[in-house]
Image 1: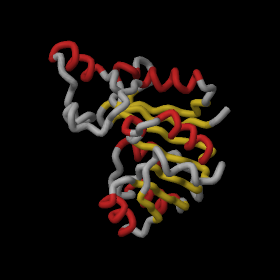
Image 2: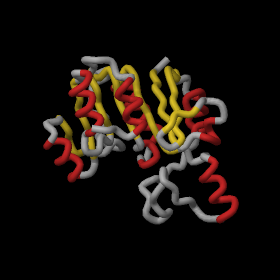
Image 3: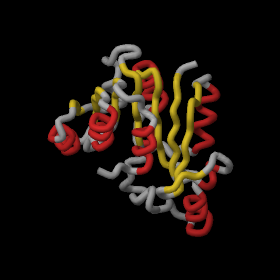
Image 4: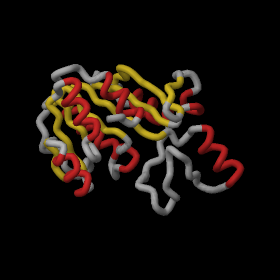
Length: 196
């Protein structure tokens, strides 16, 4: 099974045998890969009923829930890793969601599309319209994205709250790109963070 590039990076950096909570787990592709390759004890939360059913059909422990309201019941430090992949920008209260993740997991993976990518900037500059790109494929009126963040926005958010950046990775398409000028050149970002 081939994972989406950001999920592959996350999968490569989760310790074998870890306890993992995947929030917005989709059809469970990452959880299944972690279970099969790293013997991870994975649990998931997913808002879409069809994805919950698909994940459960893979033999995964997934509940239907909303990251904005359903994380409070999880215990402090109940997981080694909490994962929020391509979901932060769709949450209604991203700061509260991140606070909960940092409470629940000793380490937290967060991945998101970078709305400052050069293609997005050019689309706005020359077209004057919200872009539709490979990484942002929905039109403005049909997108689940309600918070348009950039890599520099997220770095500032972490710095202002004294949240530790353990690692960061950047993608341009399916290829990794360096941290230099990532805010301009990377279409996606993956951060591994923790409390100070």
